[in-house]
Length: 365
Image (cartoon, rainbow, N blue to C red; front, side):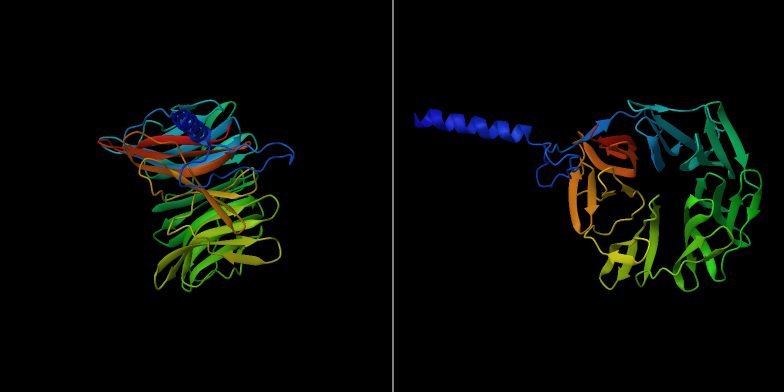
């Protein structure tokens, strides 16, 4: 009888472990239910097939307009040069798009932004910069007014677009108003503009390297000015997240005596608040606000065969892992996007004995 009882207890424990949605050793990041009376369901990350590219590959960006429209960009390495790489998510599967101008030429694709019903993508086409515009009628290109040494970042909103970089005369901020390009001057002391983002044609933000350190700049429709953001001492900025509500979130790293630490700064419309979440020394670029209201970002995983994501909700941080990948030695989600009520990631995975190729994962759905 005691032996039979032990067998039954063992079966119950095994079944409970099999149905548990929580990855061992990691608290799952649950999305709060819409109705407090509805049982909470913990979503899980699942792997999505991606058509292979020529490895090794580099992922630049991922952006989504909704649950059934997302674009991922980057470049693949061929025998002689790098070639632009573009993928589209239709809500069910990833497919590769090779119909854009210059798809078979050397170059790379950068940021993706949605302007009205169009997708705008920055394209370095054999060293020359241009904007690809994708509408229901197909592709058109908008060439830049000049060639730069480096093309650092790109932003676009209805009525305006910016490309920042550098030429032999110094930093450049190129502005497009829908018909013409102009070069916008930056404040004195700016050595290099590292990134740019925008909420509207009269509300854009940039972060720059200056003679006094890293500085946040803001465009008010008339001029670029110092935004007077008190960044942590000895720090830099990796990204900025602008939201329709007016909230702004800055992610970066601060250099300390013991190394570097990640920081987040948030603006609620009145004051800035700085926190130092225990995320390790990571380069925050792929930061997105999820449908659950929390910030999500990929972090360095302690498991070679699984990706890892952080969910930051105020002072509370939880982590979740992607699905296990057989023989993987490095899984790196590079970009995140909110697609309806789910999250979509895009990046690279290196399988033992091969070079990094593409991977994608989805939370929920």
